[in-house]
Amino acid sequence: MDLSKTAYLILGMLKLGKRTGYEIKSLVDVSTRFFWAASYGQIYPELARLEELGLIEGQADQSDGRRRKAYELTQAGEEALHAWLTSSDPLHRELRHEGVLKLFFSDSLSPDEQRQQIRRLRVEHERTAERLRAIEPGPRSAREEQGPRLPYLTLEWGIAYQEFMVHWCSRIERQLAGEAATTAPRES
Amino acid sequence: MDLSKTAYLILGMLKLGKRTGYEIKSLVDVSTRFFWAASYGQIYPELARLEELGLIEGQADQSDGRRRKAYELTQAGEEALHAWLTSSDPLHRELRHEGVLKLFFSDSLSPDEQRQQIRRLRVEHERTAERLRAIEPGPRSAREEQGPRLPYLTLEWGIAYQEFMVHWCSRIERQLAGEAATTAPRES
DNA sequence: TATAGCATGTAATTAGTTACATGATTAA
DNA sequence: TTAATCATGTAACTAATTACATGCTATA
Image 1 (tube, each protein chain N blue to C red):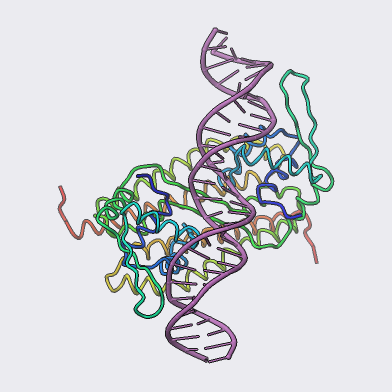
Image 2 (cartoon, rainbow over the protein chains, first blue to last red):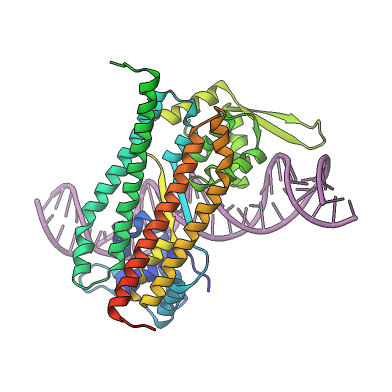
């Protein structure tokens, strides 16, 4: 029974409570999406697969007119989730960062173009950091009320990562500015 | 003319010099792979496509018995690369990190299991940091000999990122250990 | 002489996104 | 009444990996 990582994302979300595919997607979009994203095109077929495997159980509901199907973990699902959480298999880690890729090839750019690009990179990470800080109050209060604490921790991690990128960019910007000053002492 | 990011990776590598698909792959594996990976299954078809588009030009060679085809940028290819490097389009940024994902769901684990997992996460990043430090002398000496400097900078970035992760994990480990001490003051 | 490395390529598969179709309810 | 939101789902597409087939050269 070898599941995709996204399958475990779903199992994990259901461990947090009975949920529909739509609710899972909404939750992912304000939480794990910064380190593990998922789209409807993955979630709905995966829910069907997991039910087929007996790891989750769906309960259809029409009562309020809207057709919905909320899923829960079965015992087997709980076990599969726990096995994954405690396994020592090497972790899937993947980074695709176009900004750093551009930087790698930027020797051919003028100092001015280089500065502009690194500035853009910094601004993007600043914006992401802000978005994460806007989310923060929710998980924080949840944690303070003795709810799950680790989700909050990973949010803090996300903010710290964005800040790391911002600081790194700033340092490079200063470095490039310093060189420019040496090359052309009086620009004004 | 809308190219994939991986197409720009190839254009960038060819800007650095005439190269075969095999050489591009080898270079990618010791450089950009940590922020933008590529496999043969992408590189060879993409080379054909880029040649079709007139952005690169291949030159077949049998002289040493081995069949090889080395590519160079055309004028159009140079321009496409420069346009990408200086464009202000939002950057593709994607992170898939199974370790952080596990952490997000780890509230249901015992403190001991939690510590073990975060330790594993730290160790993986330590190992990656070491691998990057092992690569470092190459690009550093290249830079010192007035060769390209930005590739070295992105390598430094890679090391800094791994170290950020290691430090973050260490902090969480200490935090969890502190809590354990409060809960069970005398474990031995 | 065997193995590692150079070199090119493809087929099959997996992963993931985007865009659409459908239809209900709720709030402006 | 219109727009936003809830809700499920799929088809088409893009991206990427894996594993294989082929055949050469250089080195141990």
